[in-house]
Length: 131
Image 1 (cartoon, rainbow, N blue to C red):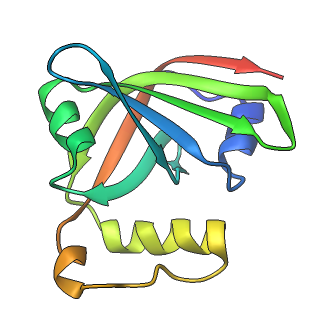
Image 2: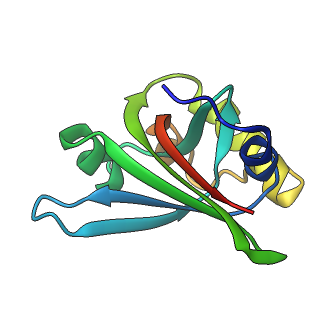
């Protein structure tokens, strides 16, 4: 496990979008733009269980996340790590992330779809920060 430097923590604690890269079965990259949060040094994201990124991470837990500062695009962090799909409180996470990114709780469409939420928890192995 890698400890995140303070500059990386500060960037992750602002509502900047993340690009999550996972590996498709044929080795190609599958990219998803996502909200990202932090739990200590782990990155956390909420998604739905049936999505490609979840299937990819269940097969190959290696993940890469890229976050850049929209005000200064040359300031970014690339984090490579190992992902786990968990059943921890995804509803609380999606609300926390929605408040950070939009200023309000996540709006629920179909309640049946919300039951299938999971948390993607990524433990960093390598961190590359460009100031």
